[in-house]
Length: 312
Image (cartoon, rainbow, N blue to C red; front, top):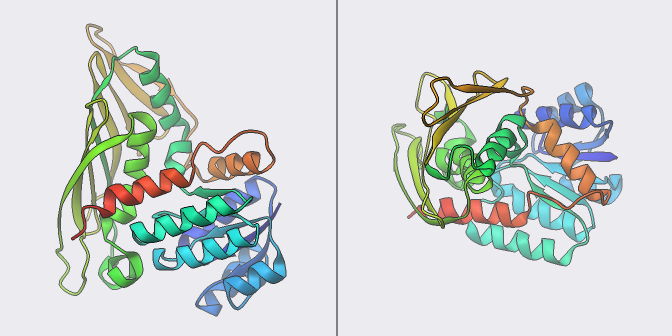
């Protein structure tokens, strides 16, 4: 398949590697900074275009990856969908709830596929966690604990901490993944609240926060993220009625769970992955009609609703 890249900053490189692993060809790239697009094209291929409209109209890709800052997601996504071009849109899918709804409206009018880039649900480890919980071995989920934290040096001067560009701070940026994982593994969110703080003095969004949710079945979830931190941590703990299960992203080849009454923990070996390749594989399969999308516009809308409802 022929691929266009809209926004060629850091995350776009991971998309490019994932497309290459799926035997796709990058034919077009654009970025607000021309030099960035040129550097990307020199590494991954593709013709540089002046903007996303020119890229879509002239290059006519099968799929575009939207890897711009959040404020620019809606315009590019809607334009691509109206042109019948399939879209993989980086998280957070939308700058705010209204933008998420407008993207959903465009999806409903288009024959093209749209998938929010919630890559964590495609990690073999997280799929394994979902399977083990669904099996009933460790009972029903009671407490879901997740942390995705830095280190994120230099964030005070980057667009991630500017509301006009990012829409929010670390909760919207990082916990978009957390919310999707909670809904994917545990269930739909019925209630949500959050506490947050701004340590940086020159920014206008949170750089540390905790999101607390409750599922429709009564499971509680706490999700933490921070830009203002000097050490990294990334894990998921799910405490269930008959045991506990854990995945530590720094030990990427195993999921560990314990069943109540059993002395030893059980280790399930999984293939280490960041999920980028798998999410592209899934999208391509859906485009070819091999299966339905398992990560849809509604997943992107719900993540936006749940998080942005906490911003005042």
